[in-house]
Image (cartoon, rainbow, N blue to C red; front, side):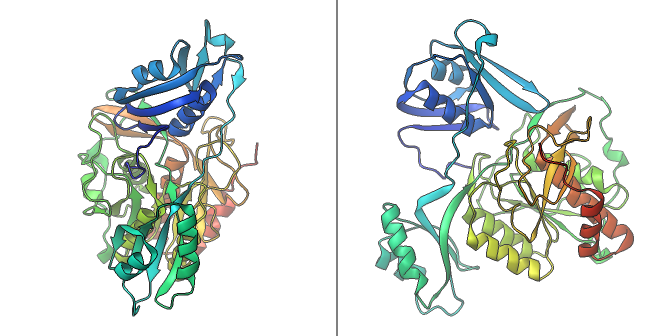
Length: 435
């Protein structure tokens, strides 16, 4: 999410919160360039059959429209958003000629030359000693939780190191590191100034842990200060240092906070933001695990995860299983790719996975993932006030935040055990039929 991936030849980084793009492409075909655009943005792409070009270009910090002009060269383009799904049309003359749908190439979420290592509490060896023995670089460390991120020269070296570490008495667990996609709802100004926005004066004071109320852990991007909603927020915890939020639109975390505050109605709880995205672009399993550990250690429960990827990390799964065994509830988004491939951590058995329904039809939303094992659903649209406007937020992210908040609201009203509330919720709000 935040420049953790080194910029190398044939890289494309879409800084979506800033609306600018960095590119370094050498002798890519037009098809390859469009594949990279689709992966970086999440857009669907259709193009006119027969288009061919060599794309060799390098730039940084270009506005999105200018970046597309440079990337697509002599060809025209148009961008359309319908029901929360953005489509890019690439053509010679007229948009109607873009009849060929681009088939997305699956993203390889594994970081091949990295390992995550968790040491035992009384390990006879330090991470520095292990790194020296393995010729590895310590990219990041969490000494409190004995969790470390190691980088190797190549995948072969990382694979050999994993075999060595698996038999080391001082190592509790070792596994690959994976990329974790940024939260990716479609966001845009909705009803304009006034437009039915909730008045902060109408919001109630949230209950605190001293009232017996739970604190929601919001593992997400940086959060903004919004009048009327500040009273819901505990001091943010950041595992990535200073993280900046945009000034011209609500950050993802801010939108999730406001969605939660509205959904909790008359029985709200406090929210603990945990920042794992430094610049809104991409993060890894390492930071996600750090965020979960920080939330659990702070007593947050339930934990909202409006994020994910296709990287299946046994280390992350084990951490969630361990916390779940202690009564911590995890609620996670199924994803917005419109497919049926599992998204993690939502696909783990101990997680309440949430997909989105279209509020107008009650059916599975066009963008929402519906892999086998998705447990429940909620409306994928919420409206949040920011900067004098009412913003429409669409995706499985607000659906997840809404479910988390409504479970907390019900708990605060009834004090029914959360496990029982979840069972009731899944029964009354099942996942919709697949497409």
